[in-house]
Length: 553
Image (cartoon, rainbow, N blue to C red; front, side, top):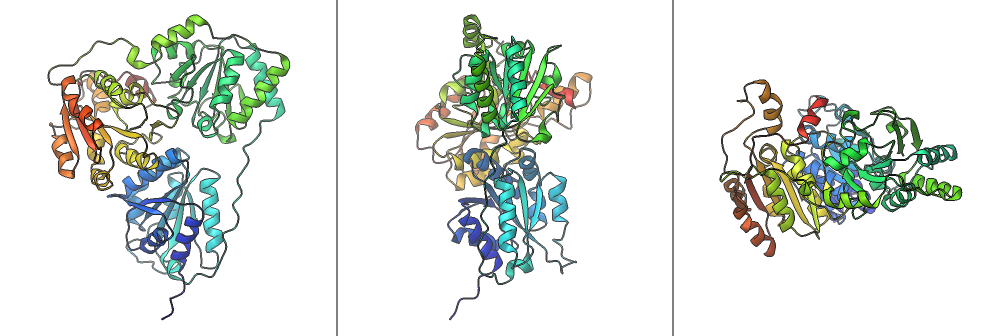
């Protein structure tokens, strides 16, 4: 009996596997059943989540950590709307993510599943595409893939059900050429070299773009020649690890010494960095009279958040190399901000864990700083830290060291809580060689709790740390001092450890340092299932960065 002709759904799956897709996340419904099976038949691993929102975030985190295009497969209508928060986060972060979504056929005008899916994508910053017909399928797939992979965009590829079912003619995917990074114009290289020559206290702030361009070594070399200090935005934390003049993170998460030194700069250069209100503390880290410069591959990003005195359209690594060559030609080499005394001070004060604090732990609750320092000491150095959003998030993001620029996965562009656990699952699948730590608040943990089953089913050795203050802590500390009632943002105690055990996790409740012993035991064991640590943290004061953060609300 002859096999029926290959359908468009099967052709899409095969084509994407041919383009290199290895892992796909999603929830399968009737609208994406066949394309998902085709991906599996082509050799891709399918990771089924318990909710499309979780699947979207897993795919996003997987893309960030692996360097591959993330792929998400969802049913039409509610499958897509369930995933929208995760898709929005990915779109705002310029994550290369391809969403395969079933779509009601054009003739099915009364379908319960019919919504304007392209409009949904556009509304959240994603790029809508569609496989229009069997005859155009190869070109449609190539166009969507190129936008995701080459332009680093989040793309929704709609797959109408009638088109999916149609016979697919034999087609080759058109060759997809890589774009060369834009080269800074010679006059811009000269202008930035002039600014660095004139500066006495330069600071470089590297962001996601610098990390993606692999500009760490080029920026270190240029900084050494010009005497610049080095800092990053949160998403690029670890890029300059080990450099004696590394300030770690600039902005709301900055240590006192980092904030002091950035605010004392006479020239701040953002390298692939948006220079947002978070990175520059609403402009308070820019000294009067200081020059602000920005280098970015996206011309629309230049000056988007704050006016800049010098805008350079170019790749961070290439521009840094060109500027250093120009300064070498001039014979310029200056100490700038760098002195042996400052290097010694940074050795003492660079890390938040080295900043003295009054431990507010009680017999019933542990100070989140103390908890984070103890965990930092206990965990292996090779780790990935995935952080949810909320009042607590500065503690794991800054008190837990990371081994390199891939060590912190920070899905915070949309500032949604509830993404942290799914972030950790995607990151763990991308880097199984590292321990992945999911740092959550109790609110975010309970929002994403369904994915505990996914982590257990996959046998992931995640360490899940819940900073439990029994509240939406950011709102408590923002509105409480003004005397507002807080009944809507506080909750009775929940036994999160028992909930985790119900999903099949190992679990421990931590109120004192001694309660962390099960964590040390778990770390030495097979780590064949997640360990959830329900840490009852003190809640009498806001996180240090919170007051700064709420200035933008």
